[in-house]
Length: 257
Image 1 (spheres, rainbow, N blue to C red):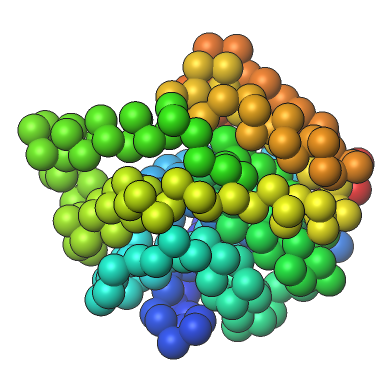
Image 2 (cartoon, rainbow, N blue to C red):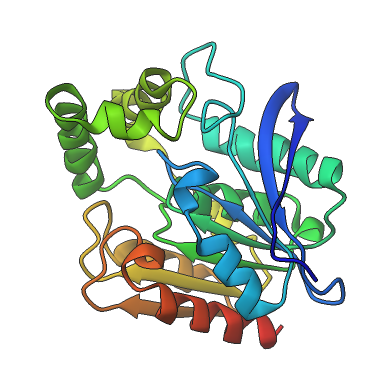
């Protein structure tokens, strides 16, 4: 097995997407990583490589349309954008990469997309790891996203994002504007959780600035086979704030499948 990544561009739903793969034991389930609302392949940093080494699984990360070095946004988003990603784009990507029944590891928006995919096409998914998932819109999320808009206009955030995205302005506005759109306040995928029957591991920091554990509670009420890791002191990205703890828990979860 090699831990050197293999980079590949694929076309899914008519859009060019960047992917990277760390090869692992083919007898073990692949892990497919879905990034957060401002994430990308490169913003995972060394986490995919460390996860592959610890779990012995193949690990695949990709940048969604409008992110990283994937195709740049050409149109504004609609409130159902995560539904489209989970029901159309992700299945097409898995088919293009010939990945069967992976464990989906989603962070924030990526966790919501993973949940939608597992609910709408359960035969495609072995299990879910949901880090800081959203199933409805909370006021804390809206406040923090509004604060991010101010930070983008007044700080070096554009320069930081430009290191990871082909068009940082398009990436930021595509995420920020739809979350602050009044139409998005009614977004809710709790009913999708009712249709998730695979094992689910939920991870959240107890200092998450973008959501509360009410999100996890809503999922746990609806998913029979779920477990939770609450990470003390961690914010919205426990995999960055406490990587060793998160990796060990994911490895144990994958071993139990």
